[in-house]
Length: 493
Image 1: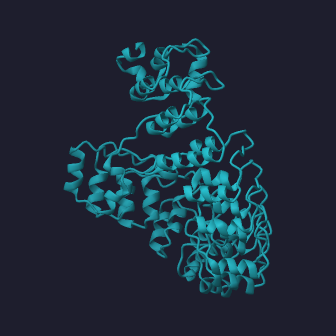
Image 2: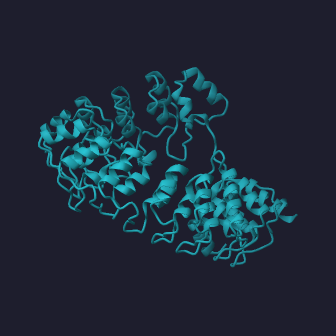
């Protein structure tokens, strides 16, 4: 087999296969606090105790995250094959980092005895100490554990230059605990690489009283080095809150609510992104915010709202924004809605004049956007069909050059492939590199199910690659299939 084929095998997408469904990677299973006997029963039924979910959690990790009894956690820890030293969990964490985040000191000590490393820096540049901060627990013993195992209060910072105190402030209910960090050598004037201080990091989740307490402690609320004031931090992050009282307090400090963020967005973009309610929208109007202003990338508030907001909320922004404005990537509000919102929102935008023949800067239309953004969830096939119907009824025909099928291949959903084939997509079309759908499936699959499915649907098993490689040769080079004794008679039918 030619060396170029080996290169292709390295470059292609991740393998197409149906992911195993071990009960142990189901968070709901652990939320019910199963007994050891129940776990043993599930193991006897064939559920793999070591299996890891796509998001990077396994059974042991979920048992810890869902606060299971320590005897259950010990049982999980004692299963053969658990690698306590590896940092292969979500965010490239190890078990100890997530357990510190849960502030579970007894389990932290057990993991330490098992050899779990304490010096790991995860994919976000976060150390063990940062996970203690994210726990939100004002418990010195939690931080002392980290200090006793190599943590450095002055030196530990994430990729943004945020230290442990800057990390903790957004999770603390009582900011008086900041005095603990000060006792360890940090200061209330500490900032990250962009000049963001304690006030900035507290704003997304803070109450007015919390912000007042910080000001009383002498914490600065001056803009950061990019000129962003605290309004730029309202609603940020997973735990971000929208509180009009906070907005009014920030204004009372002399901060300008119209001041643009570093990326060119304003509070109007924040409101659109988080589906803010009437009081927030009224605050914007009363303070003279431009509700149609685009950010540095050309994104209007409507484009952000169209991504995930409900139809009535999108309707509000439609009345304030141009429906067919496009950003620098060539995407409109309708593009975003097709990618991730409901059929109702897509329908609303089309009814209000959004152009359905739009193409992004790569020349891809809305059909491609729909398939490329596809996620296999309950109702996803129905949604895809409904949006296709909306596009067709608006005068845009589905392209049938095979590009949609190639985009669908890594979505792990033969129902999606079948739908596209049924609608006339060319199953034997080659991409720009000269490969058909069956070629890619032969190189990436971990069993023959997908290959047989494609052949049954009309894929030609006789078509060779540009390098004259046959399907059988590609299968032989497949890292998984090539090691198995396989019956390939289906290729001769």
